[in-house]
Amino acid sequence: MNLRDTIRDIKDFPKKGIVFKDITTLLKDPVAFRQALDEMTDVVRGQKIDIVVGIESRGFIFGAPLADRLGSGFVPARKLGKLPDETIQEEYALEYGTNTIEMHRDAIQPGMRVLIADDLLATGGTVEATAKLVESLGGEIAGLVFLIELKFLNGRSRLTRYPVTALIEY
Ligand code: AMP
Image (cartoon, rainbow, N blue to C red; front, side):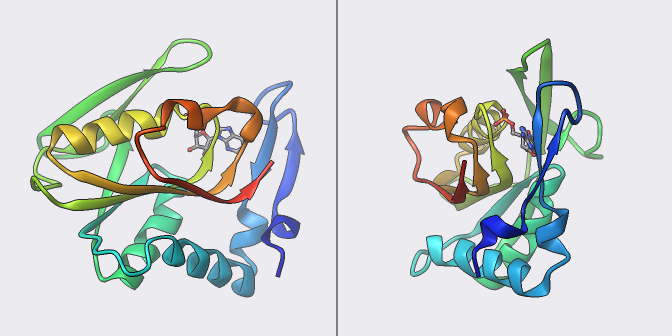
């Protein structure tokens, strides 16, 4: 199956000028969803992955089943104020203003091999901040995996230190 055919474009969402990639149409298709997880699993086949980090919130949808398949743990990277215990934080720039992403301070032990998963790579700001959190805890980044990459935003250029894989490119 061509996964691209299961992604829906929504024009001017959440604001004018943005073409939002709606993945709910992929998720509700059991064959497409399984294929996406199969392809993501293949990215790190043969490697030892201790932890999959999923980025809130659509990264959880892929990250958690991926962790289960890989026999690794799952760690959420969350928006500010959602995690209950002691956290570390990283701020990153948005088009207007900033966002902050957090992880629990005890989520990753030094030397652990970590795969970061999210639904979509746009400018790369979110995943770069998440990768910094993982590294500040001593984690080693085995890779960054996405369902979709918006190539024209050139997010990869800030992620050259990491192996980056996206299943679908626009
Ligand atoms: P960025 O930090 O710019 O790489 O943005 C990545 C995050 O924003 C991802 O978690 C996506 O879920 C979301 N995102 C950005 N642009 C889009 C888009 N055009 N369609 C759907 N989600 C998007």
